[in-house]
Image (cartoon, rainbow, N blue to C red):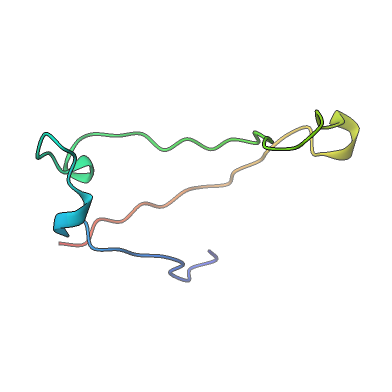
Length: 64
């Protein structure tokens, strides 16, 4: 965030492979940005939360 690396992990590790032997990170995939709110005991009140999400940009980097 703000030019600082927040998280990383080894996409070649053996423990991330699916049962079919495929590495999910070696397949095409999409990023999903969402304001979804869930897991609450009661339905959230819309007035208590933001009504919009503004994203200036997203950077995804692949290290080889």
